[in-house]
Length: 160
Image 1 (cartoon, rainbow, N blue to C red):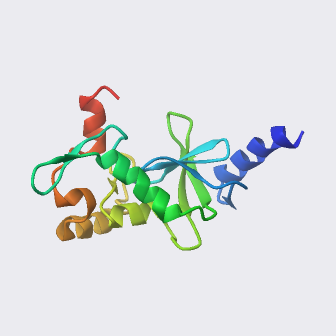
Image 2: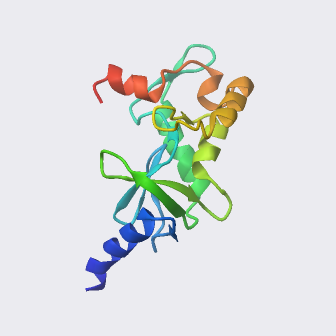
């Protein structure tokens, strides 16, 4: 019985202003998506490279920026408990949320600050992380050290 109730409790807690967390560590799916138990959570207002996306470094060499974004998010979480405040749902039935750990007050902001995600302007009309993105770009952090296609454009170009 407990196993059947847990997903429902987690989903309800994530769907409103309440803060909730799964009892097991978060599983990192990619640079902007985690799983808290059975619920997939898309970090609000950011877009990170896709897992198969390739970027160019400062000398023009290719590197796997999607994998680096995923490992950066995993390093930020560092097996700490993750709590999220749900702000909506996306078309893939993922909870959209602002998530944190004890050490990192906003995982999405930190991904943008480090240059491994950008503000997702298509869905973030407030431009929540635009200043952080501009600072990362000026400093040449993460993807900004070289050249990259925005993740949303990469998905269009690759039929994703």
